[in-house]
Image 1 (tube, helix red, strand yellow):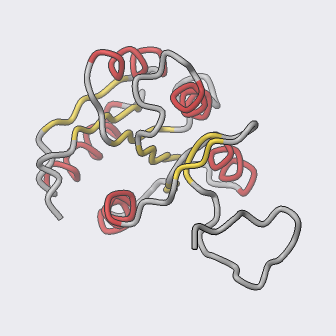
Image 2 (image 1 turned 90 degrees about the vertical axis):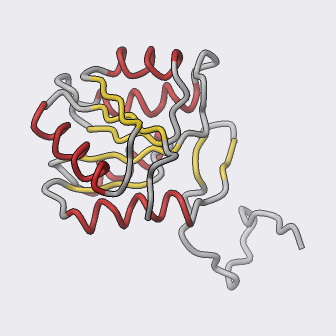
Length: 162
């Protein structure tokens, strides 16, 4: 995998974590890697430069700020790219947090500490296996379904494009 053409933003208030992620991405060929230490700085940077992929720490000094940034990227009319790929990283991967990140529109989720292979596997999934994007009254983001359950015939079944 060559990330040479991918413009990446790493949002983490921890310098060591930021540098580790940047080093892993650089080893995969990434050349355009920006960083921000706060949700506000990240959003402003995204408004000034095109970004293809955002690595987002869940805890940016104020707890759930990472999830709030994901929601803002997906919903704010001033967002320069509500369709940008979001990969959330966190040291606290309980089920409630994973659901909150998913519901905020995060594409992929990875618990810290992570392996280089695990991180690159998530990046590969974002690039080569993107899920369709959904806009609904209460959700904006990638399709939360990871598989098509052809046996489901309930009232909430989505229409097919056959």
